[in-house]
Amino acid sequence: MGKLKIRDVQVFLTQPRSPYCRLAVVKVLTNEPGLYGLGCATYTQRIFAVQAAVERHLAPYVTGRDPRDIEDLWQGMMVSGYWRNGPVLNNAVSGIDMALWDIKGKLADMPCYQLWGGRSRPGATAYAHADGRTPEEVADRARALIEQGFGHVRCQLGGYVGLDARSMSKPEGAHEGAYFNPGEKLLRVPEMFEYLRAELGEQVELLYDVHERLAPVDALNLARRLERYRLFFLEDLLAPEDSDWFEMVRRQCATPLAMGELFNNPREIVPLVSGRLIDFIRVHLSQIGGITPALKLAHLCEAFGVRTAWHCPGDTSPVGAAAGVHLDVAVHNFGIQEWGHRSEAEHEIFPGIPEVRQGVIYPNEKPGLGICFDEDAAAEHPPDETDVDWTTARLPDGTLWRP
Ligand code: GCO
Ligand code: MG
Image 1 (tube, rainbow, N blue to C red):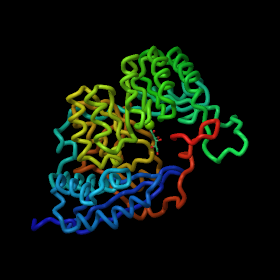
Image 2: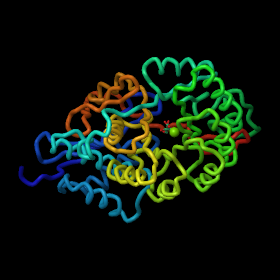
Image 3: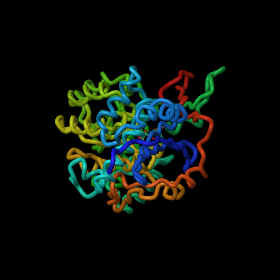
């Protein structure tokens, strides 16, 4: 092989699943015929900004460079704009970073997990979502998942919003918004877990996502009330801005804590890990800048007894999801992997999506991340031009709140 070079970087936007899942996929092409890599750059709510960041800023930066120099390219993409981090830049960097690891695996003729230490386990234990409008409905859905072989189930009553939203009366002159009542979580969620433990028994592992919707003292209260139901973890109990409260939660209860799909700067994460204030690191891989920082973070967490639980909702492309699974298989301190149903269209656009059998996700054995991308099929599912509105959350009195 002569001198290997990045020849081109392309961004593809697609939305194979409505309504919230606009996906961004980055393709890095090399001067070696047929050698390319794919990465996930999905920041679904600001997808066009990420596209511009890749096309206008990062593509010119990396074109002509040797795609094997991943560390140097990652550092350069992060600091060459002088101001760094933030969801738009980090997702753009991630798109290229994951693609470079994909290329590295193809060059080595190995699946990516082999590059990171080989198999610590054959696959990644997954948790699936059971959502319902009553505890009975949640229990039914959880039972169906348990029958499919899942040993871990996340249980939500009315999603992240709760149940009161529809019947809530708003004050005069209230702004438009996705209204919800945080107070209901304190009562109804412990009730739901009381019911679920009685119905489903003690064997199954249960999880819950607070989605940073509570005021800190209420969050503390909820964590204490849920302690007796022995959750596998309680997720995003506090907003990143309220992270200093974790110490207080820790002192008062032993509910396992998973944090922070919203983090994008390593400095937000380190104190929670080194202070042993959380149990699971739950960052979104593309949101922190891709595989390169995730590997470092996983190793840092290992030293402090913190396990991984990479965020992997529907608004992660299958390329990003595969990156998570390869990390899960390789790192010693793997904890759990979030996993959702992928639509038929997604399977068509992204052949190679890891398979789930009996609650375990298996990466395929193809070199690199093992995912292909059908550009024509993707083009048949163009992204919505308008942004989602569920993120304009409001409290019952009209105050704007975190979604
Ligand atoms: C989770 C998440 C997601 C987010 C979504 C935001 O799966 O734990 O909280 O569902 O809400 O990724 O776009
Ligand atoms: Mg979450």
